[in-house]
Amino acid sequence: MFCVYYPGSSYAQQLIFTPRENVIFATLNQLQEREEAMRTSLKEAQVKLLRENLAVKKNKVTLVSSIASRLHPYLNTDSANNDNVDSTPSNRKSSVIHTVTPGVKLSLSQKNRFLSFDAYINNLYYNNRARSNTQDANLDMLGNFNFGRYSLSLTNDYFNNYIAQPHFNIKKDGLAHYWKNIFEADIRGNYNRYDYNFGFSHAVSRYEKDSKVGLDLGEDKFSLDQYLVLTPKTQLSLQYSHIRDHHDYKESNGTDFNSNEYILTLTKILSYKFSSSLGIDYEAQNYKATSDKRTTIFRGSLAYRLSDHSDMSLSFDHTIYDEKQTHSNYYLENTLDISIRHRFIAHPKLVIHYDYNIDYFDYLKKYSVQYANVRKNTFGLTYAYKKWLDLGLDYIYTDKYFNYIPKYENTEIVFSSQARF
Image 1: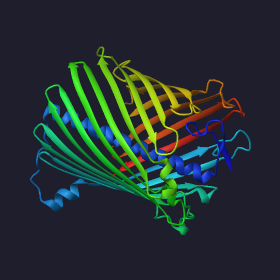
Image 2: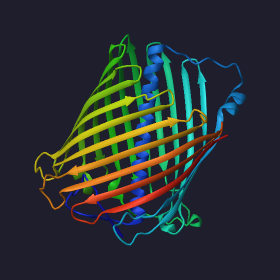
Image 3: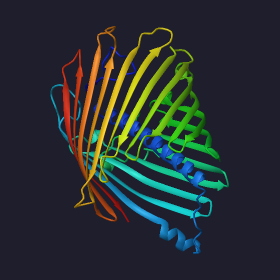
Image 4: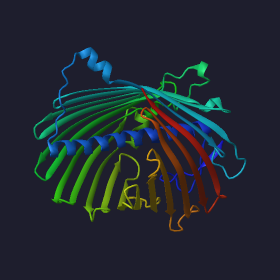
């Protein structure tokens, strides 16, 4: 057992999780980040496709040969040595964590049509704690269809960890044993300098009947994103989304909520080497039986091209979080991210990078938890060894300060590979 400080929940308390549950929550967060990154990349690609009126050329080949030539197996691996796997101030325990992800991708394209399938199995193994091992299957599908100034995209992401088997030393855990499916449809249009996107998504999560059935839920999201090119180097965007979150069991209905989020962003290319963006994000969550929440985020970012082989970026977020009725969980959060990349001239396949992240939480001396400070430093190398093989090595150092418990830190050394066949 170990203590985890979890901002955004009961701020003046320590939440107690087992090591396996900590892995589960980390896996869920990674899944959400992956889904969000995929959606963002898809929307950016669609904007470019519509504005430039690009079309994929049709290949005159048979269906069988077309599928065979576009079917690409791949294998991703990570091996991480963590010297404080439980993130505790004392009684530090180390583990070597291996992640093996085999998968296969299929991409089919014709004029104004594109289909993609990605199926993979993610396996995570500890060298000294088999109870924390996890295994899950994923299937991602994408269809994109262009009609002149308009495009339609359909995506479906399916996640399932019911495949865990005893012979892998993976024990069934009620909290982890579940499946999730997300379907999304987007219609995008373009009129000269104006782009818009109407979106709808439906997410369903289901847990085992003999475990956390109260967590079964459905979520519907409606969105409208608008992009206006003010000048050739300036873009203004306004994004709106409405979310309805509902649990299937009456015992959990009190946590049902609906939310409205508005994101306003101004992006400006200042010069050949320098670009910037400013934005504000406001979200209002209205709960059925608990206190409503309000979150306001002020954002800013800068990107600078140091040379033809080097670049750096800086971003800063200031977050104000409050509960409308009680104001009991009011806090401020400041986040700073700095990233530097350099590609060696003599060895263009070799890239070195450094990333610095700091999260500072300020609770204005209202609780026993007055502040929390989390810093993370990452040094890494990536090497394109072959056209089909990339290698990576990262050193990650994290330290965390709290006013009510001793400081703790951990160090990770991660070796990774990505093979495409």
